[in-house]
Length: 148
Image: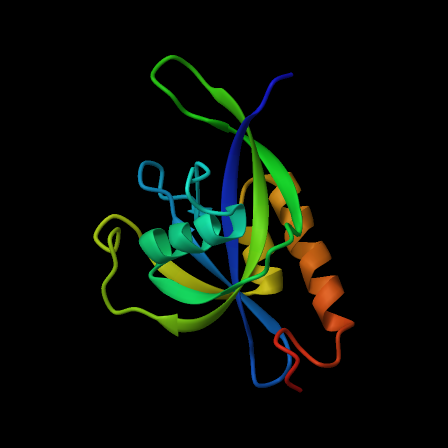
């Protein structure tokens, strides 16, 4: 099967107790909880394009890691029929939340504990990616940015 390609940010922050929270946004049409994603940008590296999607869709800024943490697939709704899409996900350590952003009137955003985020998203592969991310970062004593 041929897949179209998208990039996404997984916006995260470390809580005071050391646990990881994930920022989700609602999709514009169905109001499902998703992560910010979009088509690759021709003039940006994929991790930077993913960070821009997070700014536009979720109103967050941060440090995007250059290596993808994995991917998931879904079927995008299109007037001509569903399109199979593989989404390459980049971890975004959130450093700032904006009060206003391009899609703030079209989407809601909310922080979820990782276990709750797993329950909120519909895509099984994205759930698995959340679980793997949590496992990886629970093992890192120095946290996301090297700070304990």
